[in-house]
Length: 401
Image (tube, helix red, strand yellow):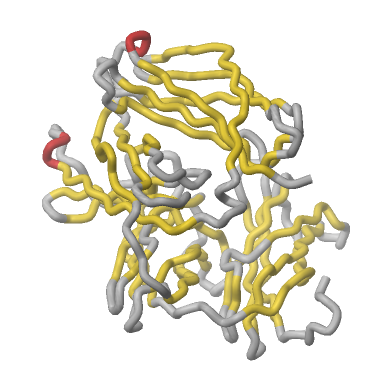
């Protein structure tokens, strides 16, 4: 609830509609607008799904896609229910929590350039963000709302890959990926960016790669490693560009669940991104241009409070050139840990990165708690998995109390 003494703000919730989600699921979509002269953040919404008679089928709490709304800002929101859609369903939403904030958002211009229907039935959107201002901005959040012919929401597509920073009057491509929405006639991108202040150092680099590989099943993937060259823990990521004859084919994003410690090198592996153009029938990987620019920003003291967890491997299995590692993660500390995650890297006997994988196994792990995991790792064709070297570790963020 609002803190005592906080003035009421003109927060408007509109266009709350029910849409089909994944099989057996129903999604409620809507817009939240800040009609006041104050910025707000820490927003939480309560969303209810009702049947045709008005009986409540479920209730969910959710946050808007943009976590801060300055004066006149608008953000979409979505909540998913494990209920099969039926005719006559209705929905409602109300604001449960907010906090006044300091205005920080910088307007960006967004356009959708191309749309592709993927083999699995999902939709990929290629767009472009433009920073019309005179300062470098850091893109915090981005989501794309699909609209029907009446202008009502039909689906929310999350940001899949794109820029972290955009220079003055610069433009960068982005990709949004999500379920197909048969009734979608238009798409609108919503972005939150902030002016970057202070001196920025480039403390992240590619220690290896990026390199393009194919599995024995003909699937493409990209490997490499990021290294933190700085003197403090930092988040690191990179948007990988795939080009053919200097035309952008797709973007893939390298992300990690935890910051990198000073001097740490962390391998990565990402699948081939959705392609916005055809590949030649007989393609030589050397024809494709693969590039990326690592980016970094400092981790807070809380984000950097990582603890080592115990890991027990129970089985290794191999199918074609894909490895499956199953096991359990245990918390040996006296405190709970948030986002316990397993990391695995596979290297050749010469030290080259063959594949990597990571998985957050649970939101939280209590003291002495355990959680099972299964990692799937793509390996290049002709790899002999039994001859490779495997490095596994598990980490979590320490939670006080």
